[in-house]
Image 1 (cartoon, rainbow, N blue to C red):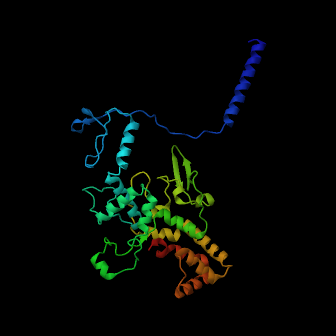
Image 2 (cartoon, rainbow, N blue to C red; image 1 turned 90 degrees about the horizontal axis):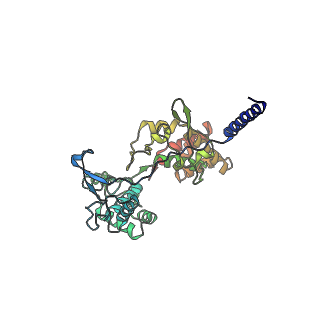
Image 3 (cartoon, rainbow, N blue to C red; image 1 turned 90 degrees about the vertical axis):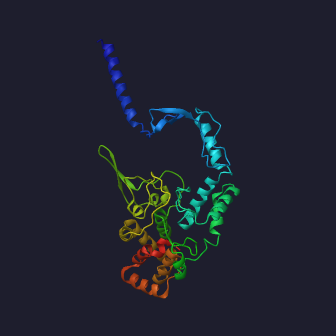
Length: 360
């Protein structure tokens, strides 16, 4: 090489080194997993269910059991996906279609009462449970449609009803006639859902972060060893005191407290949660670090709001946790415990109490 070529080569190598440094300084871009959209192929009737023997092409349509609506959408077998979705949406939201409104009304009723008018919310057909109050279900469904499909309006109708405002008092005579409360002679006590329980603890302790929107908080640590492992972690800070709806859920990194209280996985459908009491729930409430920390914060809040007056702080803690003042016996026992071991232990007992866990 000539001297000039050697200089050009050295300059070229130096430029490559500078480019490499510049590339390393560029922050990594987030990874995005995206699919390639394409129009679906026509669906064929499979002879004897065998994918290798397709029969005649099938045209888009809906359930023929809804007799007041046409089940045929009037589209060709190869109609674009957008047209199929629009026809299906119109069919589902048509006021003459009773199924959509019934399913929605039943789900909302289940949310308030713990049990739907139809006890099988995923199956309102012949193979599902018989409605306990079919006329009521139809009335609610019609009300939902007439109010412009307003969910908020239906909530108002339900919570203002005499059935919802029933007391939860026990009645031995009524139990002998209707032990399952199918006829709504009382408001059945219901345990808070896992997410609501966590939020309630944050609310009474004064540490709840009501920030809305934005990315989820991540209550876990990750480790990589050929694959990514998610380890649950009880992280501390305002970011991790947001409402549970903003929690990033990873199936292999579940929150122990939420899992103990039957918080379902997000992947499978869970039309109705299980609510059986288990020993693990009691142990979680007793020993979970999050519960113990919120008990301490509740004690701090009660003392701060009563100028460190222990007796008044006990009343304030009861008011925050139970919405009432303690009875004379409760106050005496709580004062004795708080004097001997601190107010945090009293608050810890309040967060473990049935009265805090159940809606009555």
